[in-house]
Image (cartoon, rainbow, N blue to C red; front, side):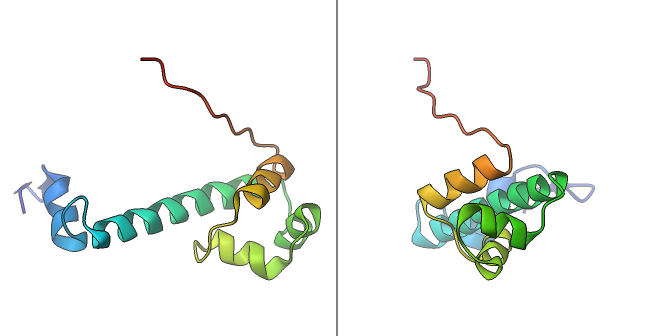
Length: 101
């Protein structure tokens, strides 16, 4: 691992060692899990900022508290429809834009 005074200078080396090279199934799985966790943390923070309980959010989007908990813990990813209902219930905005070429 490339370090300088205990600071990482090439994080790809660390990721390759821990999760496999880019493009491998192991790396793809790790990246998917990281995205799920990151998304879950955004939802948790938005729910807390909205001063809403998991039960209240679940009721608003048509599911149960247990399912919301699993989403927030990154254990499962909601389908697109539920994800958009959650976003809406939390007052968040989701945009799909075409990149400028």
